[in-house]
Image (cartoon, rainbow, N blue to C red; front, side, top):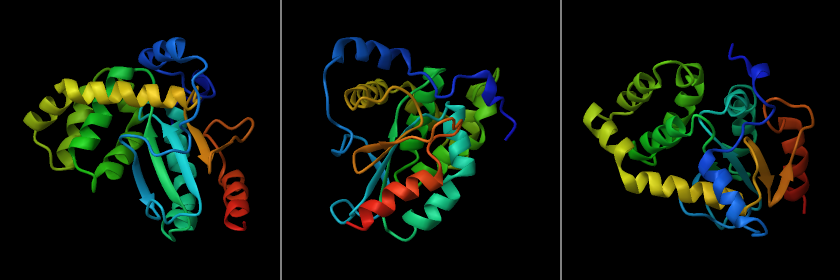
Length: 214
C-alpha cells in the first residue's frame, strides 16, 4: 500500500459530528463492552465467546486500512476463523466524514452477508476515497456487491442512514474512543506504542490469550 501514512496523524481524527458529540458528552462513560446498535461481528456468536475484540475504525482512515492489510489476515486466521473470539467492528467516521458515511451506508445496504467484503474493499481502495472522485469508487464497490446505481444513490441519500451513522459516532464517544483504529479486548484497550497501523497482532494476542486462559 503506497498511501502516504506519514502525511497524517498517527491515529485518524474524529469526524466533526463525533467531536461535537464529545463536547456535549464529556463525563459520560461506558459502552466499550456492551452490545451497541449497528454492531457488525464475525467469529464466535454473541453470548458464546469468552473473548470479545472490538475495533473502532473508519473506511477513510489510512491507519485502519494499514491494519486491515498488515494484521487482519493473521488475526482472522488465528482467532476469528477458529471462533476463539467474537470480533466486533464499530464504525466511527473520520474525514472526509461524508465519504465515510456514504461508504458505510453502501456496506450496510449490500446486506449483512456482504458487509465485511464491502468494507474491506473500501479499505483496499482508500487512495481513491481520498482522491478527487470518491463517488466513482463508492459506485464501483457498490456495484461489485450487487447494488445498482439507483440503489446506491438512494442508500447514500437516505436520511435514516445518516441518522444511524451519527448515533454510532455518539456511541463511540460515550465509550471514550478518541481516534481510529482503537481496539478493546474484553473492555481493555490494547495499544501498540509507535504503531502507525493500530494494535499489533503480538499485543492483541497477549491480551486475548490471557483472557482465554482465565
